[in-house]
Image (cartoon, rainbow, N blue to C red; front, side, top):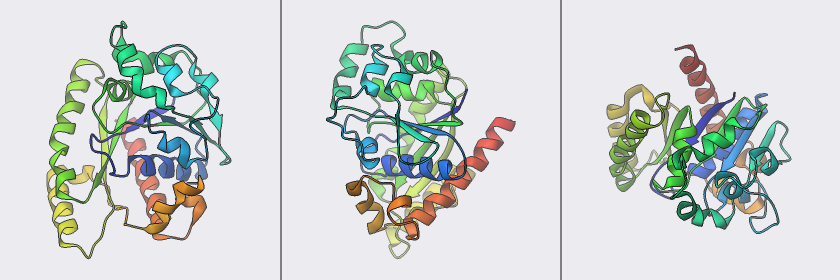
Length: 259
């Protein structure tokens, strides 16, 4: 089985999708076979990879409610070793459809277990809430990466998120680990950024990645071209940061597997 990593934060606009797509791209470039599962009804990960969310396709919605298998929903990208299960706006209704199902928290894990997955890593892009869909991602995952925007309000919600992760670990998924926290939209010239970084590193210690993701216009532009920033502008600071972050993620994965 592949290692499954959920990229999650209850707050929107913190860089979850950008982190998912670009870490996956860097992993694929390093020779790993990677699958991204887009679980956000906004379908931003799918759009960032050039997939039309309004196209006729099988999506993660059909997979999580049990209508279709995961393997039927896989779409190969132009990047070698990299495929995606796209999302659709229908995911917004999955919460209602799952609520009366048995093992509703395990729907995604069961779908993954029913499919022979020839991947090294599966990265799950979660919606910006602790919905039943997000709970499914965390129940299926081996580890969680939390992107954290360098702003006070983003920091404020971290305690609740970690509490939620610990509850899911206790009741549904004892193997779940916090792999790390990545600081995004980082501006070293800003005093608030430096204060947030200091607080986060003090509280989470080694769980915070050394790599920070800078504010970079090329990172913001890339999704409109249907490309990860690593393909859009490989030399920009954002691309180089995501390459370094992927290296840290892979290193930590080796350490977690060895434990």
